[in-house]
Image 1 (cartoon, rainbow, N blue to C red):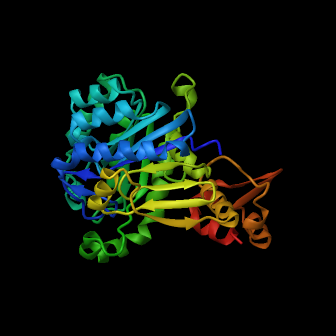
Image 2: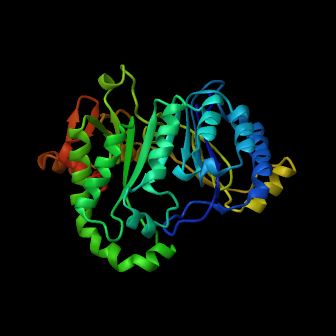
Length: 370
């Protein structure tokens, strides 16, 4: 085994938990920040053999990684393996000039900034702390620190949101000229307090989602952004000195690459196994405090499952999926029908969705899978 070339590190701490969030998060927990970094570094030592000698990407997600105590965050960043792309997720209200300089000083070269929306009333619906001005201040603090690869996250389909609201959010984001924009449809998982509070309005908005999605794609592509994945856009290489600004860490997921996840609730997929660390912070800290691996849930990944995932995730991209070895994963009759409808296109040794097929997305893929 050559080892995974992609590393995910989960930092669960947040100032508060937004109602729509279903990630593994811990509110506050200031007293645990340094102990948690100790545990992460112990887990890294235990799992180091699962990683390649050199890494392509490291991604710190959460939670709110930039809510972590700065000294603990700096210690973690200094101890992580070097990688070609090192991304940190950040909430705007946590980004100060000092924090931006800390990230830059410790090898971070990409930041994903969670703007979500520039509408104050919709931010209140989402229970977000940051204001639109906080987003702008954070963005310029990162620019001043030397970051030339910043991603903005937007959400559409927020209760009370209209098409004109979505258009304004896109205009505000484009005014900043980030290198990358992610625009996600709001998904309120069953059981979250957000789904309980806004279920009726979310159901009503379901009919508007297709129009919102088309507006996002048309607006961002017209502004020169490459629609390289269903919900992700980057500035073209010709616009940024030839750089490929796609999110390399996420591309690894979509291309079916192996990755190691560290931290409470983190998932790893390596060869024919997938495992998830248990979501209990106390259990995680206790096990690693003893020098033991945390409790995990294991899932076998037969080759058929990996092939189906490769096809399903790969077709979200604007690049063809190589079909050699994946033939058993798709239904030839379903594929022929999709070709007739102008939704899929077969090329020598490869398969891709047409532009129309990409708008229909997962529904098309579901008809294709065997």
